[in-house]
Length: 562
Image (cartoon, rainbow, N blue to C red; front, side, top):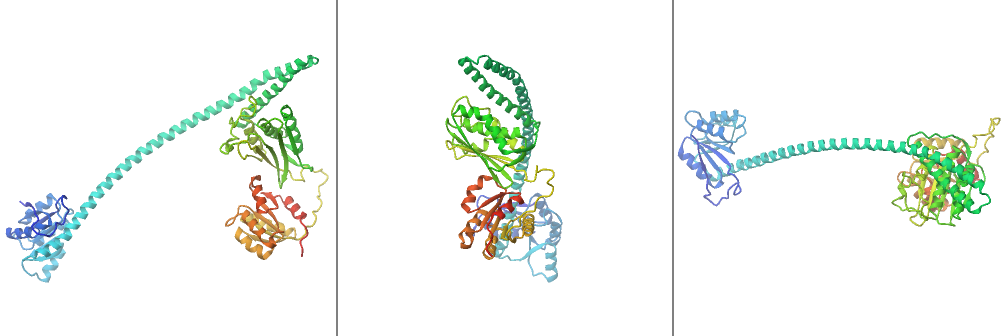
């Protein structure tokens, strides 16, 4: 049977393995005990653990029991030689990679030496052994064994961590599925709640109409029957005003219900914006007069027409005026302005009242949400007037935007609606429009990154007799402008490389660029007006550009100097 022994340091050579780590096993095979003793003595300082085998059979038994860092094997042994034993070792999957150092007492001929290497030997050692050489060679294999063992341990730890992560991933997956199911259930519950809420609002609005109708009739009867009694007339006035408020709230509730259920339809027709403003003013006049407020109205002299529902558009403006009146102090001024901006009409309602907090500004159009309380308690609403106004505006293909510099600094609401082309609604007999007057020839620089838009504008302007150049980004536009010296620059705002506002600023810095007419083309709303003015932009057209509006601007320019 093989014997095991543990070496003990016997020289100043430090052990190959750090103290405390399991000793590395070495298999020493020799049929002569004296040779085994010599091997063990030579390797004592390595700190290894030795297994001694005096025959091939003992060596095979040892290899079945454990792994080794290296095998020191005598070539010449009775029975099975070292070559034969090495051949068997290399045939086994488990021991195939174990390095073998052959021991020989004589010089081998070339044939035997090649045979040894063929059966798996890594080196030869000749007796008598040089202990220093032996230790140096063994040290290499001990170090490899130690690293291999460390890698094996790391691999086991890695496998353990992978398994742990897989278990965690599975747990997370199950938790996610559970969360998704809970979210789905919650979403369904909220949808059901919203449906019931909408149905309740619709029912409430309809049910309120019956008592309101009776009260309105009673109020009118009281007013007629007590014409000579000042006190009762005052009471009748209170009835009338409060019934008007209840009726307005009821109508808003019903409209919100219709919109949320997608049951609100528009009765569209060609309508003048001036008529919309007049109707809205009639609606809010009692509240404005009661508070001693003034509404300053500014409307262009030329009629502006839109395609819309007159009652609904008047409702939009009336809601904005009502909101401004309630959140402004008594005897204050509210400004109602109508402006034409290319193919769009802008209806602005501005006040100097309570204002809107910056954090709250994005929420002013949410249903049932209210900001600061109005200056006079009891004059608030349900938080549905502004959301209703925005939705009605969007149904007309427009937009409603809110602006405020902050609490106490007032607010402005801007309605933007598409304008009807001037040809619509013309008399039926006028089937042949008069030819447009010929435009003076201008040098026009088109700055537009959209290929299709730029191409079509170039063709259109060429048809109008204009000389054009095209730039696809802001930097190139400045280079071309320096050479082309345009009279007009059609400038897209959202440009690559250099923003449109910056292009306009740099053009104005050039001596030759101070007299250029800069026309901004943008899909943004009017909130950019101040930036346009600062950049030196003369006009702004909202996309898609109305050819008639652009032609009118070019026609209004002075004839360029040849």
